[in-house]
Length: 188
Image (cartoon, rainbow, N blue to C red; front, side):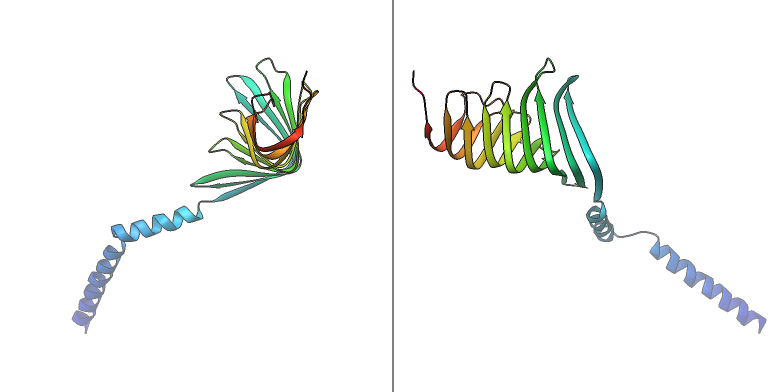
């Protein structure tokens, strides 16, 4: 009986070794499926309360934002921070002086594209008493341009204009476009 026992142990060992060897490597297709499943699970969320965010470029503070709550969602193809308000934003020039202030109910910052989207009772005020109001505003940080397809009201020391669809700079200088304007102008 002893030879049969040795034969069974030897056969069992070969069988076990064969099974373990076949489990050691994944096929390319299986490896691709595992990678794809891992990509979907590589999402993270970070929450913060009493938020203060600053953007500094070339050693100069460009923007300061405060809000009551922020949640940052990071995935392979996106990186967005949702900020609840009231949200306050200050934009600075190269000397450190505040040039523009904005307020809104909530904001979304897309870090990959350097775009802020402001929602709900958006109010923008410049240091030279220009004022903009809308329900939505998009600020593209790299070009320093603001846009909205929504209704907008712009008030300056001499004019008031409203309309739908706006594109201009954050300082609300006279270099802006309103697609469907209406308003009052003082002509000197």
